[in-house]
Length: 101
Image (cartoon, rainbow, N blue to C red; front, side, top):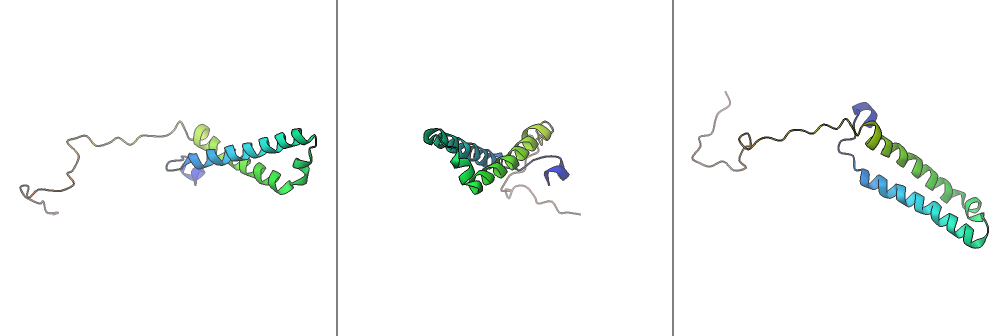
């Protein structure tokens, strides 16, 4: 959908950033444990955890590149109405209601 619309309006990047930091923290944990144990068995012994973190980081990088690099510069701010153009939330009885003709 982002590619079709050529923008990421309404897309919450916060969740992607948290997921990305979780994947990086996963690799950091496995590295620290492997250094502590003097064995790289943490990487080869738990393939599911390793591949899940890799796939998560891969897709997070795609989403972040779309949000910040590809479509980030094309964001257009919708101009807000000026004070004169704003309609009141509640209309008073002093003003006659206009009929749609």
